[in-house]
Amino acid sequence: MAERATHRDRLRALEFEAFVAGAGGRLLHTATLLTGEPSQPPGAYVRAEALLRVALARTYADWDRLHGGDPYDRARRELALRFAREARRHQRPRGGLLDRLTPIERLVLVLRMYEEVGEEQTAALLGLPADRIRAVCARAVATLRTAGPRRGAAGVGRGAAGAGHGPGGSGRASAAGPASAPGGRGAP
Image (cartoon, rainbow, N blue to C red):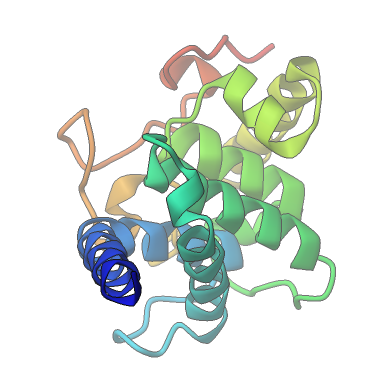
């Protein structure tokens, strides 16, 4: 019996390691966008890595309960919820384009534009009505439009930190507004 449990634990650990190897980079980039840490060498993203470490630990703890669910969705959910809880304690980052946003605007924009999470799914994840998500996203996009891009500023797009992953292939997410995200609606 103990041998069977040990084998199951090893299999679980191997599955999780494979998941982290495949999704860890993108999740770290998402955490970096959320925390607003400037571009640094690997291992120097203190807040983003701490946020990701907690999200991955919670995902691993629930690994057996995923029952065929998407572990990436679970890790992203943990990342978003942990950021939302801790946003008040963090100092506002300085200098980047996303730094002009409130923590909830940053969270919604990163989920909607970078992670391409649907409006309804974002609303369910954050426990807010879809209309509120739509309004927050539109306000965040409007804030970024009025601010205009600055040289060297970190943006929302996949290309902001050199991670051109995901569908679309261009490595950039449009700042044209919620209409550019799948399932989004045009900004007022």
